[in-house]
Image 1 (cartoon, rainbow, N blue to C red):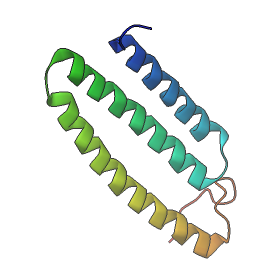
Image 2: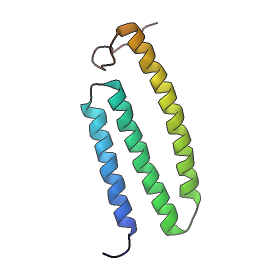
Image 3: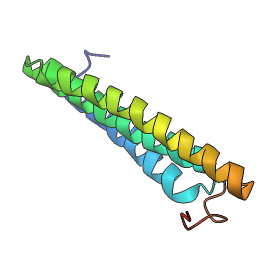
Length: 102
């Protein structure tokens, strides 16, 4: 088999993004939804780094680092919200707790 081309990476990114979308839409568990969002962000990172590599420009790799930092912050905040919801509702199912009450 020949060398990897940009199309290989784009197909991999599209597959990961599709799996992430399906996970977000089909899961009822808040942790599963967060995992789907992380999959979508990682698919975007694969595309950014692939375009960066094949165009010879470093901008895509720099953007990917920012996306990783954003994903870490998102995971920390979302996990804190999930723990708070679990403390009050005793469930992390997205169906059981649909309103944020004060």
